[in-house]
Amino acid sequence: MKFNTDDIVSVTDAAKTFSSLVRDVTETGRNFVVVKNNKPAAVLADIGTFNRLERIEEAEENLRLLSIALARTITDSGRRHDLTDVAAEFGVDLDEVDAEDEDDRT
Image (cartoon, rainbow, N blue to C red):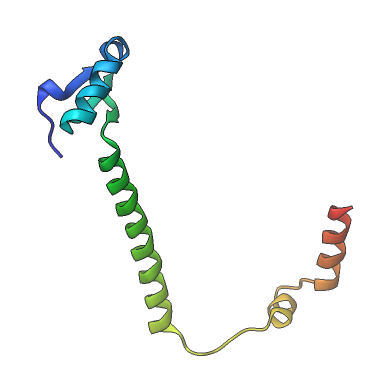
């Protein structure tokens, strides 16, 4: 997303004119980039823009999880491992783990 230089405001100026900036955002939909030490630090945007960004991020996470699930489905050999077998393979005593968990709860 590109911003007009008129849409860039320093932290100091944003603090001084915050009410005016919020009014401009809500009435016109204009967004502002707030810079600190000449580097973008924040964006002042309307709630609709924020909600769209939240939905996009949620969709992105869902797509990431879907891709993982599809990859697992494609590579699934059908072989399953029992917890006791895995624990034995790694030398873990499940009774000992249960006892430690019980000790931690008390």
